[in-house]
Length: 416
Image (spheres, one colour):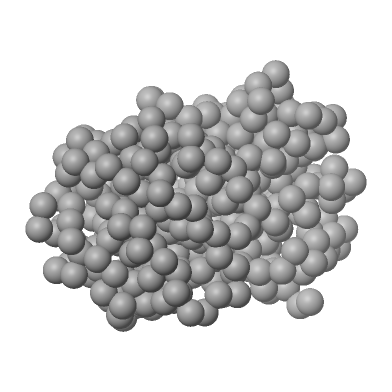
């Protein structure tokens, strides 16, 4: 493996006000060369491409405003080719050869689970910008001393299911009187707890689960799956798809499946998804933590616009999280006054950061999902967005919604 390295160049201090706003301070005893953050990501994937891009943008902004107590951030990037084995090799190289102090790694749960033992062996803190399997933060809770180096910087699958169910109650059950659903999820580590969550919360919000379909990540023909779903006559398809997305979406439109798709569709969070599907994305509803034009916090829209200006498209959900992570890692280094692993872990555990996705805090060592993100009002709750007219539009919750749900003509719910 030959990872690609990105070095973020430094700028002189330009604005004292901007530095103060960042809370990163003026040069002090900490100043002594660059602080290296490793970024291991699926750089060629629809979702993963935003991770290194967002990390670089955050580092450039921090460096332009004086860095961390006078030290600049250097992002050292590695394309893991969506491979756990390549990710492990990249992590080893990052720590042993490139001397990174902390790692942001992957949106793939299988990859993150493979990296956790190496973070422990190499005593290097790392944060995932997108992996959601409950097993990640549960492992930290069950064996804190071994796995304390891992932070789950995205909602767990169980919390994602709850977010989808909360939106479904308002948008589908209460507003459109829908009563039944079929769960359709890819067969992956992250969807196992997601589907358990769906099966528990969908009936509670008023949607009877008629069938539960899990398909292989190697699936290329979704026609039989959609035919089977149509035979059940559900009002909605509740999705759990991340590593696939283009093919089922294209076939959903081509087959004119008269049932809306609503749920987790990670690839749909990236603005490139519209073109990738030749606009078959029209009408797809997906859960997100932020999105274009959605002011979750005052930081959300400026980041999205700056990202698009720099890279040509709005980011995936993992771009928002990776951007925030560089900032709260920088704040943790500032608080710790050091890049020592144990001190940095303690500082990360104290994170209370208003980022682009909401207020970021981690669950503590005595809570079941240790080092997972806290979920709830005033923290992170999630959004529901829909592809409308080739754009990603927020439709829930009401305080950030920009439009009502609108379906293509082939969806039976369009007539409701």
